[in-house]
Image (cartoon, rainbow, N blue to C red; front, top):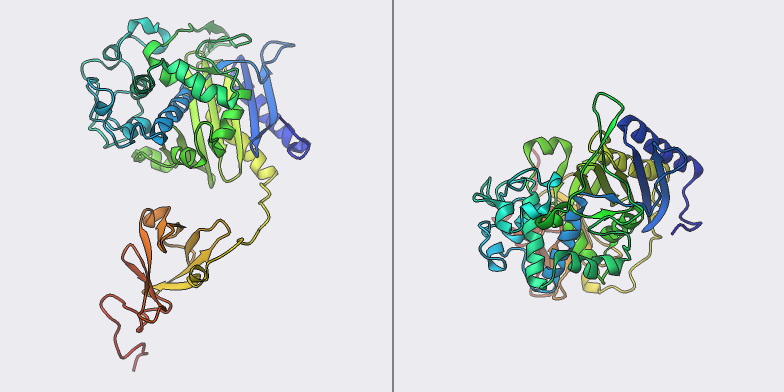
Length: 461
């Protein structure tokens, strides 16, 4: 997958190897495999192991735990994009009788459905799924722990329900739908529900002694959509490239961008960490960098897939130990190492191919009261509204084709920008969600709500 244009510098490669070597040594994990993706291509692979003369490669399977949830979320977004569901639909509309039907599909994707974190009964990750053959066996008699939609509460059982939803609407097992709709189109030939050789064995490492204990490997049954998958650094590198760019055979760029958009209220403790959750993806701000992806943890295995969106760099880290190795931090560090050592080279600036004079007329400075803003027409055909002071409300706006524009982010997300003209056709003001923007501060020629003092601006006399 690596091309000469994509190859990393020797110093960068050594820094990456040093980071995973430290992680494997200090984390006391039997093995660790990692990969880095830049520009949609895998540009580095690294591994460390306790077995002399043998190391895992990009085709060695590890169990990836809750990264499975991101795959399940992709299946659900496909249903939405096909018009079979709306994310605002209550689960009861499509999967009745669960006892948790008040939660919407979006709630389940974002872990705001109020459901319990874990399945009822014995520790589901270390016991066979045959102990929980039906949804009722997973959810128990009281599936809710919190009011629906009120708070973020991570829920494995919520993703069991989403997997059941996929099965109900596709008329096929979750595993079959996943293979047909995601794994095969993306070429993820080494991602599977059950391990396929070569694969790592899962181990527990004693916290106070350098000895190990094998962990059981169970099939999770109904809990499969929450954490069953096995995969490789090679396959997850491809999946990371898909999550960054989309692939119309599976899910559009717009939909994968929606997955990594915050959809859950952050807990108070998470606010300090800059962490929140989207639709099947974790979101984190660290050292001024936006990171998205997911971590995974099941007995015997830890996993992380992290994407630095603005840097166009992703990292995958897989280990075969129950605890001890901070894989999420390691993956974030791999992204940082590449992004800092070899900053992304931006695409060349190119002008618009064509522009409507009536649109170009709107570009330039505007004032909301006395607050100055710049409205810039960008090469992607969008408007960018930025405060002249550098701080304040900002947004991008997309054209609707009828002379109006819709805000895409921040305070003005979803709000409509209208151009209000005078009888002679000249622009009087812009109306953005009732905010009036004029060409001069409190322009007395414009229809400013409340009017403008006819005496005009003055000093102290």
